[in-house]
Length: 358
Ligand SMILES: [Zn+2]
Ligand SMILES: [Zn+2]
Image (cartoon, rainbow, N blue to C red; front, side):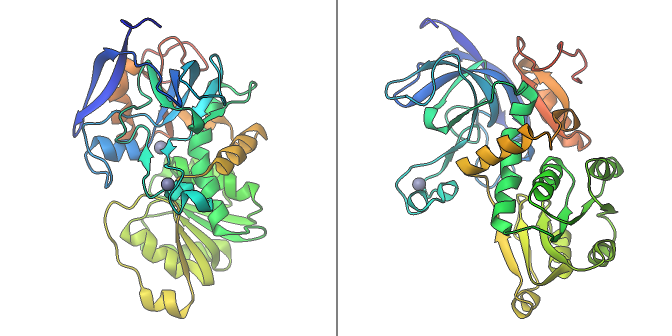
């Protein structure tokens, strides 16, 4: 690419203001790769960021952290990828020398930067630069849509890893959005015996049933914890809270077995209160879970390769880069599962839809 080449970049310039800017194509610096976009997922983090409600970054910023693309060029010192490789990015940009980084918990890096979330580059651009050591190769036989699910699935895979052995366990998953539904696949893959899911939307509950949940419950019920215990036929060994609001956390603590684990997967937007006497007396473990590590990317890739996750169930809408604002609006509707922003010349699977739907 010559020095005068330009690229289009999606920019969240202010809360709920999403624009397309034209900028020079950057040259990859030492340790970086220049990547041409194929697709970039939109998720709850993007939704919160675009509303100006994310706790850790605010507009203006360059969105797009769930990317699949092709390496166009590499900077000095890069030897793990080459031009032409199809890759997905682990968007956590870690320092490599702090305490978490040197004790195999680099997702908790004390100097963490996040590609597409307040970093100087984001994936919703024709091309972008990213530290090459965060790139993972995509298996050749994967479709673009399968590849686009590796990063979203890595989050539940990490949460399941933190929960401990799920073999034969009774599990509740609160929230049947993208993360909850992918958690269903990850928990089942790891041996969970019985899985009950909740959501306020009937469409999401129906999808959870179709994807293999043993039972579903309307999350709006006031007796949520009792209803889940009844459906499980016992208390929950592990509860994954993908919603993380006051009613779900309270219910999670009520439904978990004494000595059980509540994994907080959903990004809480504000402090909430917990029943600490119960947590102490019943020896309940409240376990936060954030992002993933390389091992989670590898396991997520294996789960998708096994056929346990069908991309067609998850990717419900695609929008070209120039219509990124519509993709952000669509995620706010709550009715879609995974939405992708796609490069015009590579929508992944099929001809470009005119109405934003596959
Ligand atoms: Zn995301
Ligand atoms: Zn670090």
